[in-house]
Length: 221
Length: 221
DNA sequence: AATTTATTTTAGGCAAATCTAAAAAAAATC
DNA sequence: GATTTTTTTTAGATTTGCCTAAAATAAATT
Ligand SMILES: [Mn+2]
Ligand SMILES: [Mn+2]
Ligand SMILES: [Mn+2]
Ligand SMILES: [Mn+2]
Image 1 (spheres, rainbow over the protein chains, first blue to last red):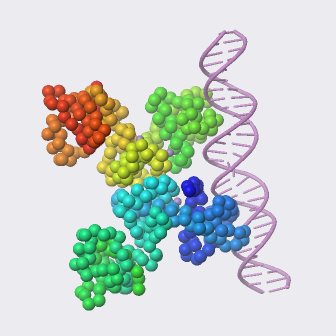
Image 2 (image 1 turned 180 degrees about the horizontal axis):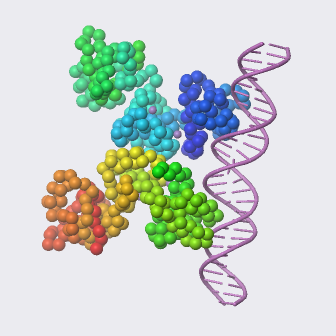
Image 3 (image 1 turned 90 degrees about the horizontal axis):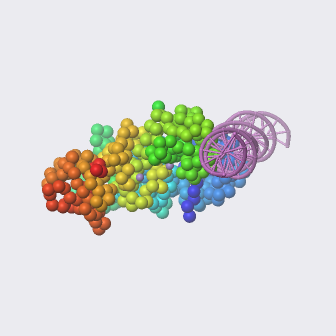
């Protein structure tokens, strides 16, 4: 069950996955632009990935990942986003300086390492950029569900989940009259402390701290 | 000042360093055995490392790392041992299952990553196997200085350092009459809790917990 | 000192990943 | 529908790291 792919193959698979998300299928030219390489190099790799059963590809046609390929892509993305979360939350990196390093760390494939890292980080659901982190089975929150911290001003949303079940968190949510299903609107965001002012119907506007916003997940309305 | 070496080149440099430690200089045959490769492949790489100024090498002679090569070796070893420490102390790996993973993580070269990891781990001086971790300048405790946790029964030693300056630690050391310079002998080791019984002259035998032994560094006598 | 043995290097080749230039196919335009 | 343009693939090289087999050198034996 271990796939044993080269760093290059993994980077190709991840790139195909991300381009698919945007447009359903991918072309040689688009992929070569994304990877900053030549179309000829891409064609070489496409044949290789097809031979390994990871890509559905016929010459001159658009292509997409096979089910196996998609599963591997999600493993790589899981590693990438977990490491990003680690770098920001534990090593005090800025969210804008983690990508390059995660681009390397994502290729350390030990399943045990990744699952233990996930546990150490308390199973985060979103990376520092607000992108969902696949769990150990490749499942992740739908992209509609995002951390409250990433909503723009004026956005209306409904609380769908909290990433933490501690009594401290539940106490705070009770005090602010916030529950799963609560509808709210972002009134303002303050860069000084990254706090957010939100409006809940029939209540006074209230302030959400950076810490709280980070663990509150909502779907936009 | 960034060296930008391949994983293979880094593994060669590290192997040369370790073999040098044992015997002062290295031969093609010995290195090929260590890296499980052929002497011909080693010769190829030796020429490449010489061309890069990392190795002092003349055909048919023994060779050793240049000052630059040594510095790079210490950076790789620093990364390897810091990751091993991280895996054991933060991710709850067993000390016997970290080497393979660290063998991969050591090649992620970001200086910022490594120094922040070091800080996050509180600047550990020894890895889980008792080997010293070079600091950000490549300096490390002499191999004579080891954690008390790694001394065999019957060994006499003298306390040389503690890896932590907390008041809690100093309080405990005061209570046990242990100072820098204190001479002791290991009487027994208990695998149940990894505690150690030591004898200090003119005092009753006393028990050192696993936690305390881990931060007490000694030189053997 | 001559011969045997061990070590090391060279020569030539292979696989992976890349490139440039040319050919083939598909898409867009007239 | 024919022609131009774009996209994609193929052909042939290059670089890195590795191999085997043969040649060169050094070390050990007699
Ligand atoms: Mn990558
Ligand atoms: Mn991200
Ligand atoms: Mn390694
Ligand atoms: Mn170690």
